[in-house]
Length: 115
Image (cartoon, rainbow, N blue to C red; front, side, top):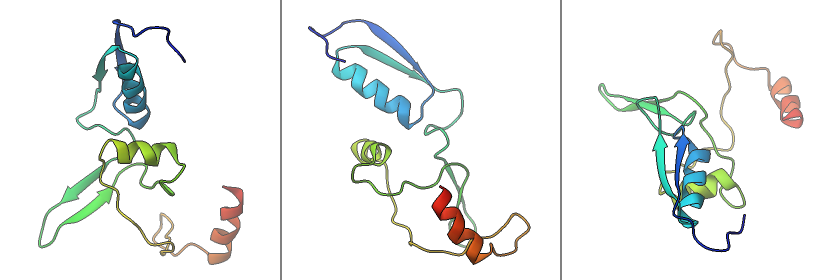
């Protein structure tokens, strides 16, 4: 979208997830006053983690948990622009089924070609 002149309108963006932040950022750059509303107690949409404290700190990922690369990846780039903390993860790690049994390696290999 190319605007001939900056706007002075007001916009409400519903939901505080990464796409909402991107929209709010772009609208602000066009001169709109933006209000971002979120119904939950946390922002980030499906990208959410919860820290548990005990003898040592552990973290549970409760939603979307990974960006596969930040170069040329719009969500990854936006996360960097918004100063989200990104953590590098290993390329390979064990996968488990809901019943706690390891995922069959051949099945995992084949699924990588589907997705």
